Image 1: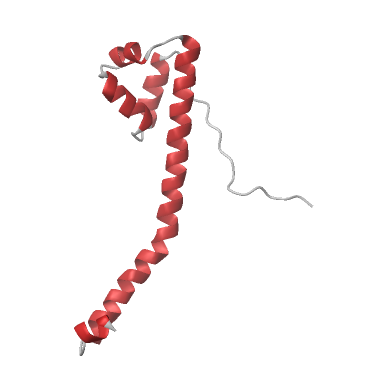
Image 2: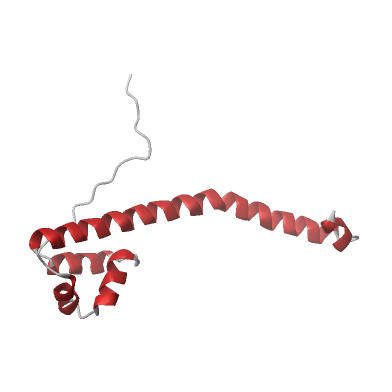
Length: 112
């Protein structure tokens, strides 16, 4: 094995490398799940903002001017950034809207 030839006589180095890999593998599912949830929230908020803009007839240029952003920054703001609650509330206030959050459990519990 490669690790045996490079670390011959250094069992502590091999053990430390294995510990580091083990820690990373334990964190991987948590990090991946968190990233997926963040992406879902980001996509849902962006879609809702676009629907509100269409319903109210507000073009992105007008909203960008009100928020003191360029058009490119506005698009990046809506689609790419993780908005803080205060930024989201400010954005929705400018659109004459308010947030209505829906939170649900990961798995539904079956009742007997």
